[in-house]
Image (cartoon, rainbow, N blue to C red; front, side, top):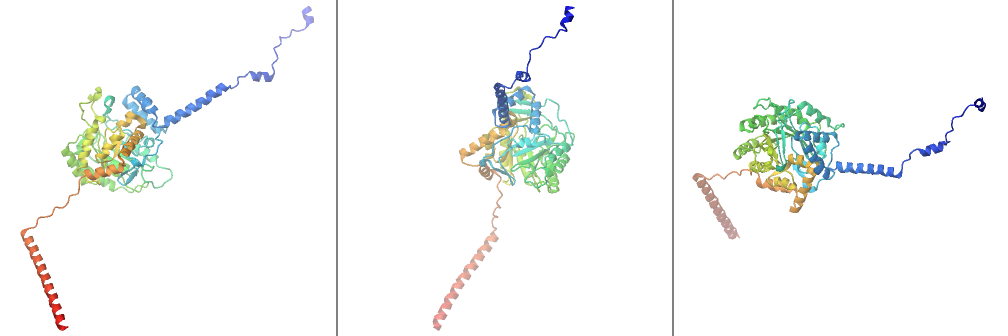
Length: 476
């Protein structure tokens, strides 16, 4: 009863908290948190600036070695191509030194450093490679039909030797796929451009390969390549020097080479003018460094009589110098990098002496530094290409070579163009001066008789003048 009288029990009351007090209990951003956020944003921005600069040590000493150690040679190669394709690759932020200006068959180049075929086989990263500072980007080799190439593993690093052995065997996605990528680069607004690179002082080249299943002496694959890529490139490279396609090097033999060069020149001449550049592509032949002097002399004679515009010296070698250290030296395939440089330079010097100055040479093989590039120029090369050096030194390789080359040229008080002109003028094949034919005895007698008649006529003229003077004196 007592409980009923007291009424219902109330729940214990909770401490009263106003809306204001609840709001103040929520966590607030502190100065420390703001500083952390600011530091994160700034560090991310600084990292991005550092990453996108191709010159940064991050690429040469951290990312590039990490890729080589973490992945096999081919996988790291493919990953590098994909990064450059994505548009997220580093860039060369600097303008080229004026000493580096070069010229190739009438086209001005901002520098003489190009990238050889083999890195971007299917034209996936053309603009990413130009962004690294190369003045010449050569894609391929591209075969008419898709083919997988040789079985893996097929690429081997020789780091102690600064070399590389590959037996890729022309893996290619084929003409149709590569052509679609090249056409996708064409600017939306139709206008004439100086080159198919669609950027100033630069050249786009396509390296033409041959399908493994094609007949060894057939030139049809090359003719097809000229017709397919001619309207979309500045240069077409006829590759007859890879050691990894059976029978390909046989096309360097005189009769087959004459047929090949005649065929590709005819196909090029039949092309309509490009609607993008209003020009037709130049034809360049790529040779092996393993040719002996007699073969080079023979090939030079064929080139002089053909419509080939220039020559690349050289491709990879099947030789294995005794100086090689790395165990991979026993692998089958073409050797590139520093070990091939002596072979390439020797072949280039020989060819230069048997070709006129009007046919430029492109040096390729073992170029890692500006001094290497300059050595090729002094041997008679108009421009140079890198490949293995780019793979080892990473995305900053082109800029470093250009900077080193500019320093070398400054030391010598000259320019790239001056070095090239001097070497080409001195080392190239000189035009033959027609020999003076010895005179026969009858020709000598006739010449003497003519001189005698002239002398007698002169004596007669003197006598007549004297007689005329006497007559005039007598009359006066």
